[in-house]
Length: 318
Length: 171
Ligand code: SF4
Ligand code: SF4
Image (cartoon, rainbow over all chains, first blue to last red; front, side, top):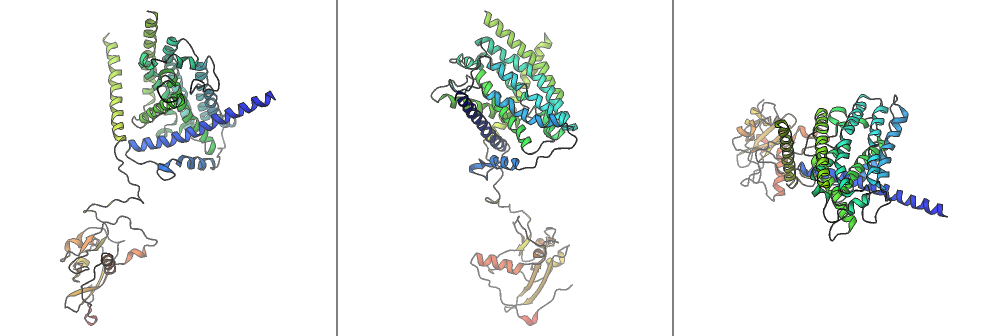
């Protein structure tokens, strides 16, 4: 009986998480198209539903109906495993994100560590996809993805260390509770900027979308994928955007804290505002070169993050 | 020390230029879109748009004012016009057949310039489409202007041609 209850609970959580991931991705694709259209003085999708609201549903259905093309000379195991591996960590990360004070599935006391451990897995799927596809463009994209992820994982972690030093916990709920009065973005503005830039690179968003730079290497690591396998990469990219924005909200913008409105509303408002920032950035800046990317990561973000850490440490000790 | 100063200065200047760029895109975000939802909304072309040629609709005649002088046919470098004309009841010569081949027309404007009664003009139609090129080989101008006149409630005041005096174009 107990066993059955546990199974039921797991099933329910899985349904909630996967449902949310899907709806979120569909909404974000629509939002991205709308934001880009507005910036470029266009209308964007207008036909299906109110202002094209259901356009992405139609696109998704079309995508699921597409033929799954499997190239001949691929490395089967990594090729087939990669899309699933891209999806898998994002689902797991969702388990620990607290949307409200009591609205979370798991309350880990090492939540931050958990999230970073799993989000680092994302690059593995990129590399497997690129390596398994046996295609020069895919391989180039994969190698770029790995280099980029290596360069930006460090400033990402260094920038959140300041926050963790201030509140002294790795528990996501604890971090949000510590921001009851003042959001950490006021204590750590530099860290927030570094975190935001690094997450852009981590999620392969423009202007750091080198692993899939379509004007140079077709579609990068997912060149050889079609149909639902491609959809998995797509889904994981948009879910990743949500996750890093949620993390930024929790670490710097006070999580669910806010007056008047209920907690989840505040949380989602902040998250979608950050996602909007990402889209705004995407349609403002051109893609940077790989050497500029490396310069930015190793020569600017890492030293700045270290300086920030040093100053935080000194101030905390005083 | 100077290097260090320059390092931070470069970062700040770079950051500032990024913010300027984002400000521009933000401003654009609130502008009205320049594109229209085409089949639902349509643009009107400007006066100087050179669409296919058509007859001008005159108030004074309730129709075109062509006098069948063949100057347009002579001026046309690509031989688009097939014209036949005859004297009408009032003694004025008027075309009995006026056909125009859009497929050969280069929209060069020469016929418009040469017409003594200013009865040719470029239409502002930009969505010409047909199932077969044959529909465009011989556009009947007289019929076309007649349709527009009826749509505006005008009746033609041009006299009926006197058939015996029909005149063929000099070729
Ligand atoms: S516009 Fe030029 S090519 Fe066209 S009918 Fe007139 S004269 Fe001929
Ligand atoms: S030049 Fe003008 S008046 Fe003369 S035949 Fe052509 S359209 Fe008629």
